[in-house]
Length: 360
Image (cartoon, rainbow, N blue to C red; front, top):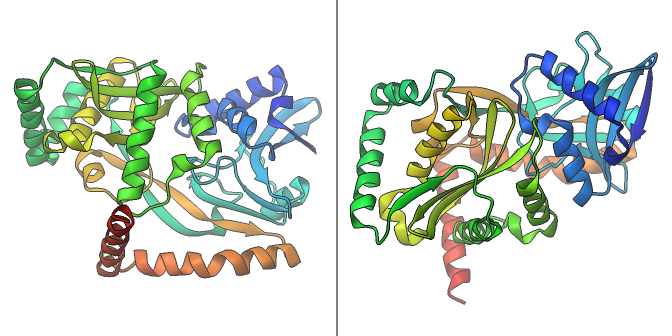
């Protein structure tokens, strides 16, 4: 068994096909973040991206995508925006986590959305999180019937607002599941940036590599990882939008936002119902809403996956420095998250600070 570390763009057709086959045989959900195309697109905007490839004889039997920092710190590919992370390995192949890091030349590997079923790294997880999902495998009608039992008030209210929007809107209400217009994507990113600022959170779209990555993924069309921009319109005016990634069977929800002028109609909720309907019609069985607490996720979900956060270390000075730099903040965040009342006060403080900044 040997390990070869390459830049993602150096992967050959044979290696990419082997990656896809190993992923398909793993039994894990076909999450587009775990496909080779996502890693290669990230590499185009994050030049320190690498892939470790395990070879048995002349057969590639494992792949581990990661980003390598200048001081030997490693992170999951697309760390901070990727919603599913880990290695793609042949069943039975289980290298030690520290052996993986040494092969990659990194002292630490940090993850924040490690998928379940990653035995090489799960022992290093310090926290686990629910990632709500919507199952539309039996069709949208079956899903809506479930919502009538599980979340009757939510469904009744959302459908009523959709009808009201149709009556009062200045123009026909229409939904586009896979909008190709770049102008609609720009509008979504502007809404999302405003939302981040309004709620006192860091604006992801202020980072050039993220905006470039999203634009590239919007243009990407592959069987395992394609960008999907869904838009709810009134006439020609977009009022809610979502950008995510899809494989043949999974739609990973990523960046939703809406026009605050239409907030009374809950256009984001209407959008998610229409996305579920269109996804089912397109043969997609699962919508992964992603890690994070939100009332709308609780109302829409039919189940949950689990993702993990943590880090693997090789004991040396570089790893110690990384730990000292990251662990205090991680513990502080965990302390707040584990205390709902304190978390609510923290959110209120962030919102208040955002409002003050907006009035300067």
